[in-house]
Length: 196
Image (cartoon, rainbow, N blue to C red; front, side, top):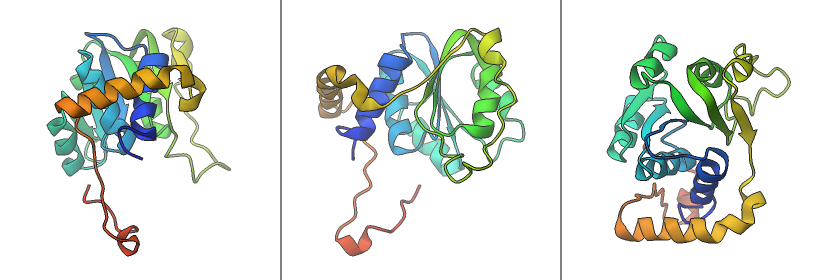
């Protein structure tokens, strides 16, 4: 489940195939301290992007900045998420890698640059609310900004996986990409929580 497996491949495919990242672009990643988000942020930084992570605690903010994110926003401690993202991304957002949906997606859509891309990787805020999903009130920004919003499944891009694995493996080998490891010894310790 690590950076050389599904989580790393998901980050790579999402950024390259859907987000079409390029040097100098601004990339925002929600759930940035998570398995996929932490890899996605590092990959975007390796490609010369400015990377801003949205996280849920000060400890997670410190963690992602230690991984090379240029800025981190603790949405729980930010009374005005829009203003916090605007401060971190004064020229707007080219790519939003969305792991959560809901209010954070709603806040990000108006902050996107024209022709920006929203990579829909997950909707963690909605998984337990399928009967009453959050009503995102800023969807009209998709038209105003001419955004591309696209979900994806990693293995629909099977032809790109060998290249992704080769690049991820090389970056891990050289230390350019730091995996987020959560290792437990013995099956009895598997349910314990991570420190983040």
